[in-house]
Length: 95
Image (cartoon, rainbow, N blue to C red):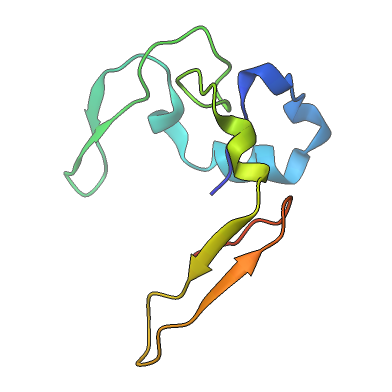
């Protein structure tokens, strides 16, 4: 997951690989709130209209700094449930 918070004022031009990957999602990134049918006939809803940039989160998230805190994580697969404490500033990626 990639998310940027408007308050961070991130310049997407500094991250061309991320920009190109996000652009691959096409119409669904439009901030119109409209729906359209994709090539398979599925109904896809565009992002809602906001004042934020196309690559930023849609809503103001006042608690974003909470993601930087120490946290408990666990795996969701397997027989043995394992948990771990993850230090502040570390993020876990879930595929």
